[in-house]
Length: 127
Image 1: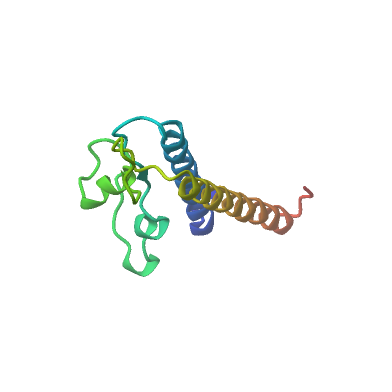
Image 2: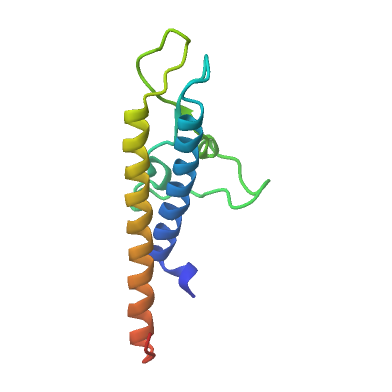
C-alpha cells in the first residue's frame, strides 16, 4: 500500500540515495592518504529523481528498459586541489558531505514516519 504513494516512494528513494552517498564518502575518507586516489560523490538527488512533471520511466530490474539515467546511480569524480601524492580528497569537504547525507536520510525517515502515522490515523488505528 505504501509503495503506491508518491511521497513514500520519494522518501524511500531519498533514503537509499543518502545511504549510497554515505558509503561513497566513507570510501573517500578511508582513502584520504592513498596516493593517486580520486574522491568520488553521488549525483545530486534532484537530478536522479527529477521533476515529477517531467516523468521518465525508470529501470526497475536488469533488462527492463535501457535509458540514459542508468549511469546516474554511479559515483562521479569529485574533489578539488591535488596533493603532491596525486590524492584530491579533502577531509573537510568529505565531512560536510557526510553531514548533508545524514540530514537527507533523517528527513526521508521523518517523512516516511509521518506518512505512516497519518495513514494509521485515517484508518482509525493507534500507533
